[in-house]
Image (cartoon, rainbow, N blue to C red; front, side, top):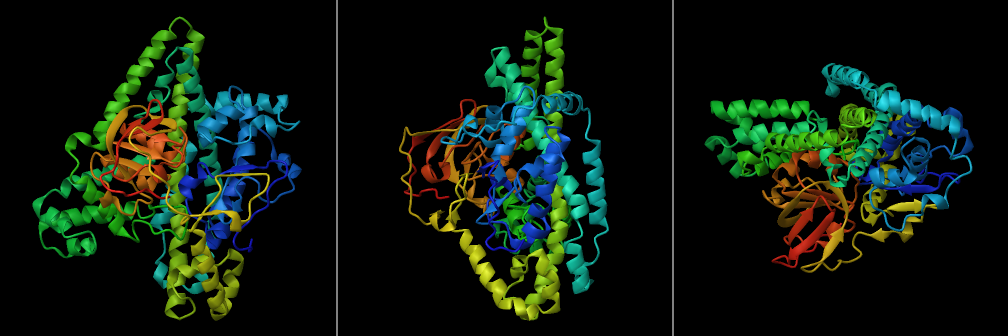
Amino acid sequence: MSEWPINNAVSPVFPLYSRANVGEIFPNPISPLNASAGFQHNLEPGWRDAFVACKVWDDSFYDKSQVPITVLPAFGSYLYINMSLMRLFGARVPGMSPEAVDLQYFGDMPGIPSYESERRDFDEDPVFEEKAGQWLAEEVLGATGLPLYDKDRQEVLEIRRNRPDISSMTDQELRDRITSFDYILRPLFQRHIEASLKCGVGLGAVAQFAEAVGKPELSLVLVGGLGDVDSAIPSNKMWELSRQAQAPQIAAMFDEGVTGLRERLAASPDPTVAAFSANLDAFLDEWDFRGSAEWEIRAKTWSLTPEVALGTINSMRSVVDSESPQAKNAQRAKEREEAVAGIRAALESDPEALAQFEATLNGSALWMRGRERARTTAAMVIHEIRLPALELGRRGAAAGHLKNVDQIFMLFASELDDYLADPASFTEILAEREASYLDLFNYIPPFVVAGEAPDLSTWERVDSGPVPSLPAGGEIAGVAGCNGVARGRARVLLSPDDPSALEPGDILVAPITDPSWTPLFVAAAGVIVDVGAPFSHAAIVSRELGIPCVVSATGATKRIADGALIEVDGTTGRVTVLEDAPSTAVGAF
């Protein structure tokens, strides 16, 4: 892989691709080094392995395509998911369907070619449908724990504990470490995708039970407030830090601003400040890998930019105790138990259906946890690639071979040895490649690719002009992510890097969210995202924290003015502008 920008082949057999879901973790273009040594390099084969493990087809299936990458290609260096393959998965799993896959995994995508328009003559396969049924019964509904996921976590924690002193490693040792984690990343990604597929099946089955008893509105309540969801853990720990930061001597230091705050805290002789500083350091050490687009090795995580984490803690300081993540989760858990009791009562006369409901409920909760656990564990490994790459970049920049540290991420893995042998020969190549990479951020990738990837020159530009904001009374129809209704001022944020912009009671309006956004949810009264599905990160975390959420609210960041008074109805999936913004600020993607 060395073509730049990265444009993988479109499969003639499975020609439909979507940015939904993958846009959560890769809102930006993938860097060459991450594509060839980290994420795409390992997730592509891991995803193939996951489909086989789910028994919807076997390894010989991939020979039909004759295209090297079909599951997770990049077009214009932006990653896409093969929607055709996901639909085929839905067609072969009993109780699922291609249409259910569209809703659970991709959200509301008007104008997408129907499944019927691409149906293949081999899609229905009784042999694999029977095998998939066995997989569903035994591994989705019959599972009782996450032993492999727990084992993976322990193995990765051991890797982190035994991390060598990166700064003392030779250039060759750094280069070797960058490419040394394939052995664990591929199976980690396989398990992440398996859990994702199982979770989607579980959510769909729960929704069917809610529909069957005449309570479709309970489908999301039944999977809320689960607890023990990895992506929500940092929010709880940040909350604890925010309570400690209310101490007068610590609050005064926060009031001076977060820039340089960590250093000021560490230098303070005050014992209260010193205790807080030690707790903060422990938090940043534990969650050093967390950050926006954290599966991109070029991303700046909390350990590299602690001001982002400190800014979020600062925003939490003014949130009242009754709005704690724990309190919200407890309320959502109570609502879930009440909903479960209601459906149990409705199914009491049908023991078989009741047993199926219990298995479905347990399976959906288990695999939601499994998905977030594997996702977090993989992010830890990606950080182990990031650190040696950064050190190699620092050395290259110090020697004048690179114009900045981050240009190291513009190398492809196949170029690492040549770079070590003659780094000066890459100076201009990497500078040109970086300029091209940064320019890609100015494009809006087409949300769907059907049949042929459009040339980059035809893509819409970010700076193509403002979009008129919705007036008072205007609405956006999205997809329900978490039940409930909230009113508040819209706060349109395009990244989680400025948490100070979000005040308690605001409604967060974002293009898409990944785990680094999660702590912002604590202060928010509601969440709206442009792209998403009931299965996406924003919806899962909102259900844990009990925050009304609407996903797949197409164009919300463009059409809702920052500061407008809005209502988010997470039960119906509707967003309504109640009052114009006090200024003319317009959200922009």
